[in-house]
Amino acid sequence: MIPFTKTILQWYEKSKRNLPWRKRPINSYGVVVSEFMLQQTQVPRVIEKYYEFMTQFPTIIDLANASKSDVVRAWSGLGYNRRALLLHKFAQEVCEKYNGTIPQSSQELIMLSGIGPYTSGSIASFAFNKPEPAIDVNVRRIYMRYFHGKDQGTPMDQQKERELYELVKKTIPYKKSCDFHNALMDFGSLLCERKKPLCSECPLTGSCSFYPLYKNEGEMVLHTLEKKKENGVLEEGKHVPNRIFRGRIVEFVRKNENREVTVTTLGRAIKKDYSPQEKKWVLMLLQNLENDGLLTVTKKKTRIQVQLQD
Ligand code: SF4
Image (cartoon, rainbow, N blue to C red; front, side):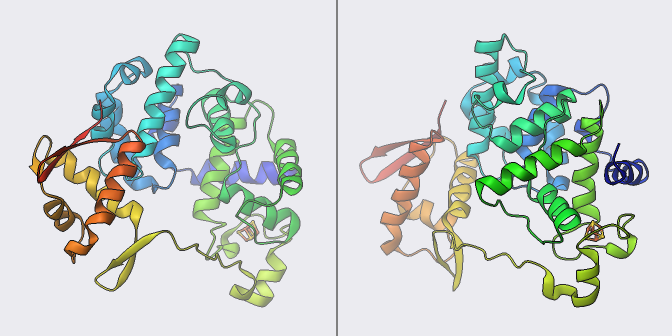
């Protein structure tokens, strides 16, 4: 085991977070649920929803047999509702193609709905202890800082990502992929943070390539993320992405199922300063949600009825 790996594992033994999907024996289905929930959502919020979701759909078969609308209802509060649909589809595909048993290899996992390069690696390592790299922004940042002295969390070109993949693979300890990946996740969240790495508390300072640079130049050497402006509209003078309004529409429908409303009522419910000129925009959001398979919109003279798709 190389010193980098050994040090991270030792740190993890003392500092690990107690998260429900890490409980032994590992529930592979629970790992999948947590991985879908954790995309774009913070850990504390996921923990609470995780328990509720697992109570409602305790097995992958229960989830596969549930209606789409029940799964979207259960997703309430997590945002990015498309993830609920993808998770549902994933469960159905596992039941159809693998008789309800989640495949263990990242090559098979990546062929299923909702699974990308990171999730295929994370499920293989967290659920099945396979030595498969799971590289997210945290892991990329740790390796790029430590081994290359660069502050880089976002994906790079194909060649560099391939090299990073090989590097991470070499550091995964024999039969300890699950623990090691958990350790990396905690290390990236608690110590080697994006905005303020806690180098003074880090056991790797003596060998980290980034530390001397950060020590001398401070925040100047931290990579500032240029946030792309998402499509959206102004609400009370502030730019709000359309995805927030989409989430509000789904939330409105969850609470007002089968109610017929005018577009104006819906517009006012989702936007504080809604004006009738924005009717087209609300209809566009509804159309997108319908296309994504989340809602069904029925037009009725002057009103519309919006329901979660079954
Ligand atoms: S010394 Fe600082 S930059 Fe290097 S791994 Fe530790 S926390 Fe990250």
